Image (cartoon, rainbow, N blue to C red; front, side, top):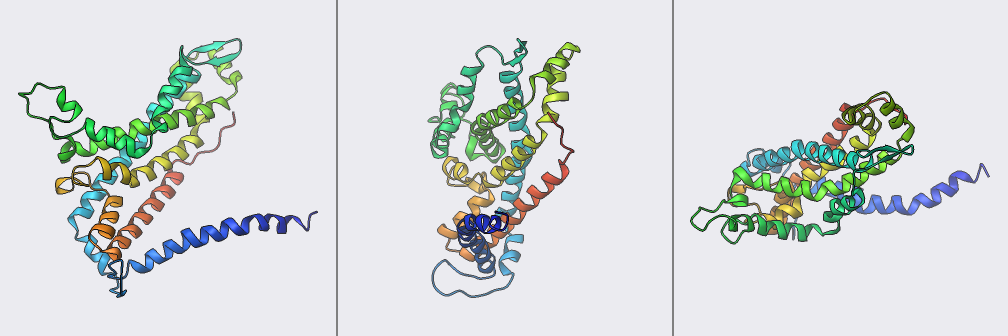
Length: 301
C-alpha cells in the first residue's frame, strides 16, 4: 500500500496539472513574449524589445488607471471587511448567549438572505442597474429625485465622483459573500469561549475585538487578498457602468479596461500584453505583501 500511494496521487494530479499548465502557465508565458512585440493581434509579429514598457511609462491614461486601481485597492478591502465583520458578528453572536449557545440578533435568518441577495445577481445586471442609478443626466434615478430646476450631478461622467460610484457598487455587491464567509468562520468558534468571556463581564465590543477578530484572522487575511484582486480587476463593472467605457478623460479607467481596449478597440495587442504583465506583477506583489504583513501566529478556537 505504501509503495502504491504516490503513483495513485500522481494519477489524479496529471490531468488537472496538465490542463493548468496548458491554459494558464502557457498563456502567461505567451503574454510575456508578446509584450515585447508590436503585434496588432493579427498578422506578423515584430519584436521591439521593451518599447511597450517605455510607452506605458509615459502614458497618462496608464498612470490615471493606476491611481484608480490604488483607490479601490485601499478602500474596497477595508470597508468591505469592516462592514461584513460587523454584520456577521451581529447575525451570529450579537443576540447574546442562551442555553449555552451564541445567537444572532432578532431576524438574523432573514437578514442573511437580504445580505446575500446581491450575490445571486450577475455582475452585468448589477452594472446595468447601477449605471441607471448613477446616470449623469435627468434620466438617472438619483438625479431624478432632485427638482427639475437643479443642475444634474454628473456622477460617472465626473472624475471627482466616478470612482466613488464604482466603489459603492463593488462594496454593495461583495459584502453579502463575506458576511457568509465570516459567519462560517464564526460557526467554528466554540460557544464556550464566548460564554466564558460573557461571564467575566465582556461587552459585545470586547467580544468582537478580543475574541472574534483574532480567531478569524486567517479568514480575514484571505478575504483581504481576494478583495485586493477584485480591486485590480473591476473590468466588467467599469466597462458596463462607465460613460463611454472609461469615461471622458479616463474618469473611470482601470488597468483591466485599458488592456481590453488596447487589444480589441485599438488593435495594439502587444501593448495590451505589456499592460497585462504589469497587472500580473502588481497583483502578485500585493498578494505576497498582504500575506506577509498580516501574518500572525495562529490562535486556536
